[in-house]
Image (cartoon, rainbow, N blue to C red; front, side, top):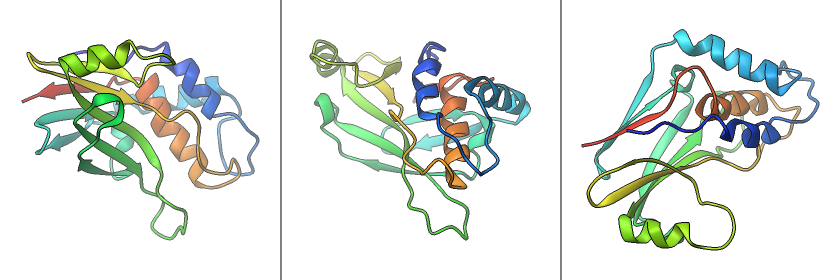
Length: 171
């Protein structure tokens, strides 16, 4: 079992920039502090029946996402679980992707790691034959003044840095 490196928090903070009329932390440091304060919430566990793993997420994720499993050939993966943000029930905002967990064979992951450009994600876990990789968004897709933007930021920051780490356990 492996956790996401805190170093990725700096990358995610880029997604948290922008002025807003909505109640949103003024700085990346405040957003991180808010997420760390939520670490006392019980963790949320997602179970993938198709891919055969349990993913422990920070408690702030509870009721804020929907997950879908699908075949995926991105960078040589063979399966992905896409976690989409659920806006408040009265909102007409679209549902955008928070994270992807992709499953690669070890050989496909080795090839993907050699590709030019940045990495497709961070390795969470591996088994004798598979590698589980998480990908975070490059930016927040919601307008900075929207009600959804600060919640989306909070969820992504909780993965990248928060008080609880993400754990993937293959079954």
